[in-house]
Image (cartoon, rainbow over all chains, first blue to last red; front, side, top):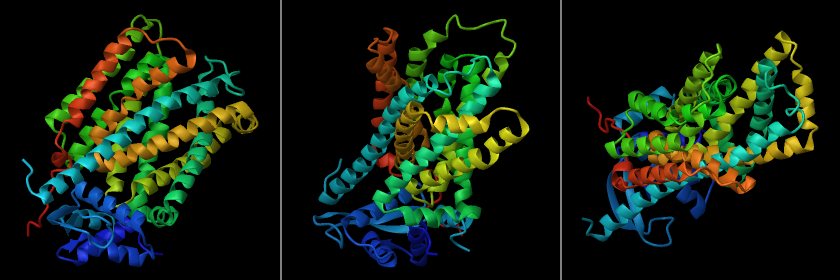
Length: 95
Length: 354
């Protein structure tokens, strides 16, 4: 069985030093065979939740159309935090 | 001062998240307030209307039956919600990870279900409904303190002040009703006080525990997990134990409820309110934190009075307006926090120390 989607996002973030949201969302859309603005926006909200909770940090931003937005919007580069890594270990997402 | 287009766009991004967080919390309060109408009306239908108010054991058992059927209906409405959102597969993927993740939703359901609801009914039964309402108002304090101590959720002075003003508003609304209700001959009043504390601790703890689980899971999926466990707790643990070890007619209470059209109508309406109230509740935690989400959720006291007035066509007492003013001011105090400060809700290490 596949990992739940928020867990998958965290695992992908753990694989990278840092990653732009557009690249991360492209990966998760492909993994779960999803497409369209609804899912792209839904994963943006998930990334906002993770950042609010302190599991990931925004380390850079830029204005761009990206892969999913029809108009220019702010995009973020994310990095897993030490707290995020600990939380992943606590929840079995990271060995 | 925000100058560049990027800074303006970033500010708008944080502002949007803050507004969504507070909007979800406000929906919690509206739907929670609306819930009181069908939630109370069901007690006036068979089989509940015939239960003697002094028969505590039967009344509490009937509450357990009602809560179980209610939880099943909530679960069904959440299935619809997650079905429409396309998150049912993710629900399956989440709930199976019990050992590390969904156990927290099981704990949240124990805190919010058996502990808080049972405590609230004890407070209602042994002291009075007004006392129960007032003690419940303190649950955001419990939630905020646990979230602070457990995972360092930031509670700014402004948020704490807003929370205090909202609680004060609730006390102004319900407090005068408490005067003159103390009964010195009631030797079992302590049970009601214990129940009141249980309800505040139960609901407060639920928020903190659920937010812990939502660190790594989706809130829409999380609320469905929480109600899955509540259905199981009542259905395969509490009700069977009551049925086996007491002579309370649990089976006939279930059948009589299911066969009563009016009871089921009220139960269905209550479940719709509760399902989406709880969904909003959990979604607000992820964007504005447990303390703020629960404090704004506390406005349910205001909306309950408004809905009761709308249904009964009886205006509330004059002091309701004073309490309403307090709660509105408290909400604005909280909402005036900067969107940027809410975009990171916890004091946590963002870099590896080694």
